[in-house]
Length: 89
Image (cartoon, rainbow, N blue to C red; front, side, top):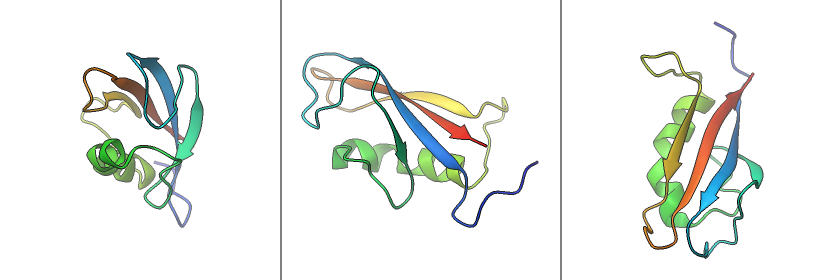
């Protein structure tokens, strides 16, 4: 396994879909870097929900399947934003 940088690996969030209107202004196709210290303008509720996943990817953890990315959706089911979180080596 590759050794992470001092602050860990880079994690890129890519908006896959938006159902309704995202209150944080994210649009399908948006891509931005997130980390344990950088919310990248995400809604606090959504960021709070996915923080442990961001932390795991940033610090080099893996899923049992070995995947280095995952799709997650926000809690607002009327205006749901789905993003892919992906570790970049």
